[in-house]
Image (cartoon, rainbow, N blue to C red):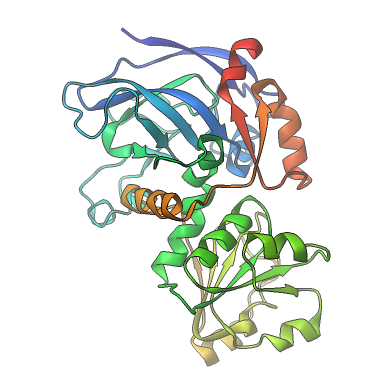
Length: 353
């Protein structure tokens, strides 16, 4: 029997999100049924709700930073039990056998990963719906365990912002003493600073906005560079092994390339689309420097990141909001009026729906 579920959904590119009811599937033999307690709010939610990337179908329930409690398990589930605190991130399935999946990078599945919302279920062909809802049913292999002691609301953004910034840190071998820079101090940027600092890296924040020094240092930055100041940029020439660029819109990468050292990498994690202005390849060729992209992370990597955060007491800096305030939160997010991630208290859905 399917499970009636209350949610908030977008029904067109222009209408505000509002109450919506739909049916979750009945748990299969390998499924975990979860009561959602908290759901983070990501820029991707807003882009999808407004069809900024051109692939949205309506109605759609956003949300891919879910923290909840297990309420039921399928007959073949061995990883979880009723009552466990668990998380569901951006992925809910993949083919499981392509080279990327075999390597633990389900987000790069050759057949296409199934995303938490706006994806197509590989078994029944239904459209997946996300975490702005009271419950979800997910294949056990795509559920992660939340370490004891982590604040549950603060842990929600780890399922996207956390893994998005953890992935390049791990992929490019950041360790104690590594010199890492972060471009932008928002939902992704503040997590990149926290994680890199906990790894023992020397962390620098690139920002266009003066006045962020105190907050950046509180989060773990050792240095702050105003990226509009040519003298400050020149002072860090050839310094960084890795730059994590978290800016979610088109911007000029050229000022940052000279600050990479030999074999250095600038990893884009925030922006999808053409670069403006064009990238000058001269310093890249001469210094064997690279501009790369990085997309979230696989399930094993997500669990590794959560366990690391549990060990070091790392959660996101959040503002907890009611479900009915989501449209206002979207507008505030567009103007960077949040430090540093909105999280929805799903209990408030009862009074909103």
